[in-house]
Image (cartoon, rainbow, N blue to C red):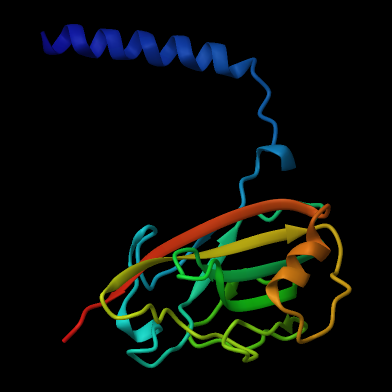
Length: 184
């Protein structure tokens, strides 16, 4: 039986090599690229550690991305709470991030060459998850690849940044996490 398995494997290998020898290998086109965002701080769609919240040090998580489309001129990053009682609540607004950047370090403020908008805490910078006690909220980090630099003021709020990029988005990726504060 072992010899039969080896013979079959050998035939399959020989056949696939012969077929693939005539198949040109072409690089992936920009169309095949998929923008992706990730963090080493937590798993996508899982719990956000206290470190990144109002109950901890309230520092931004490390974020990295790949698959930036060739037509990208700048990037934008917006973090929002989609479960806020009065509608979407924006925690972090960064825009005009240079397309050459592929990562933000943990605790990053404003990357060189980028602009920071005003969040719904009325602050310029990151403010982490801080849902009302007794509830769990979902937070989404969305990275946008944009075909231009955005012409909005440095302290623009998320709706203004989103409106400015409306017809200029060439890629988009989401990373989400959940944070809950229980009554003690």
